[in-house]
Length: 149
Image 1 (cartoon, helix red, strand yellow):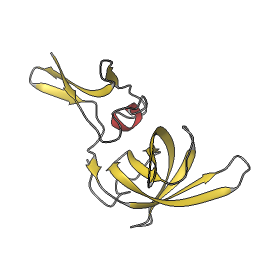
Image 2 (cartoon, rainbow, N blue to C red; image 1 turned 30 degrees about the vertical axis):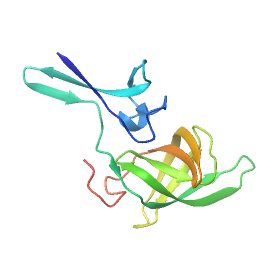
Image 3 (cartoon, rainbow, N blue to C red; image 1 turned 135 degrees about the vertical axis):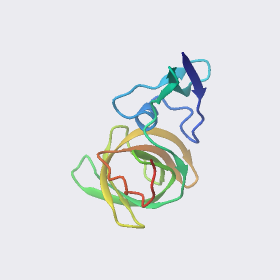
């Protein structure tokens, strides 16, 4: 038996690439094509269940620094903050517009942890900046300084 739970993630409900943050790079998110919202699927067999989600998500405003290389080979750095964090990604608000698939380095300014990352979703422009979905590449589980398992 399969039970489908509709999940609403602030800022991710319109994205086509939320699968990378919600389920990881090796999974594809099922979409409810009527609403375009990601679905979380749980298989229940013989009293056991399996969730495809890779970790919890929490609303958290964490100051971060984003570094990336421009097409002219110059390195840029911009400070920003997160809105949502998880063990494998985050939703960040950045004044600078970045392209999808842009490779970046993100630094948690609270504990100075650094990790390589990639932009997997681009949301709306807000007065404080662009909403960007960031997938962390091989993150340490204590990157955010919280236990998010």
